[in-house]
Length: 319
Image (cartoon, rainbow, N blue to C red; front, side):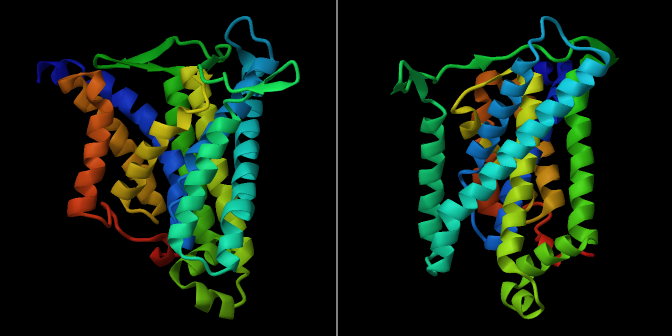
């Protein structure tokens, strides 16, 4: 326990940072589940696409040193926009190719789940491919690094914890985006359509809601949130690979379940909680136990509180 006490503030800051990324990815899981009652297991690869788009954008600037001033703002905005656009567009294509044909045929949820797993594996292998001399070689499985965008300088201390600019950026961006999304879903006409579909899709159709448009919008928003998480991940960790979303995606799914899958605020709470618990656990048991802690939490939540901490779906949230 001495390690926990000595590293408490450091673990808290790091936990909130990585937990913010989990929360943004968890939003995609919870949005799609709230509307379709479907677990989109290919969502982790949507996050991966966002990281590649952001990394490629950062590399285009050819930074020799961390950016400052206007250049820093330009790099961050471009990387974020690229990640959100690429991931959002990929999520929409995924819905049209992998899910809509099954939905139109009235297939059961098991078929959609199998389709999601197949799409996930396809995207993993697609981004592992490298073209050399006109031939495709599956050799791109190593980490790809990018230039440093932000200086890893200390802004201030909280106890033994160090608050850096990149950590603060990740946390603040996640909170702000969560507030924007929560307001959009609860206050706008399109948001009301999403909530109506989540609550009762048949009644929503009778009230004039275009279900297909709502579903596309849901995938687009969820993908964009994963793309933002991907851009922040690249700024923070400065690397990616084709399997980068696999474990992180499971942790984000755990966060969605912990907070109450189908609940937007629950996704934020679950993500931050998972980030904190795995870092606290690592300070007690060692870093090699991080993943064990996360998956143990998933099992315990499913056993004792399958509805999550908040449990209320967005279809029943207050306007």
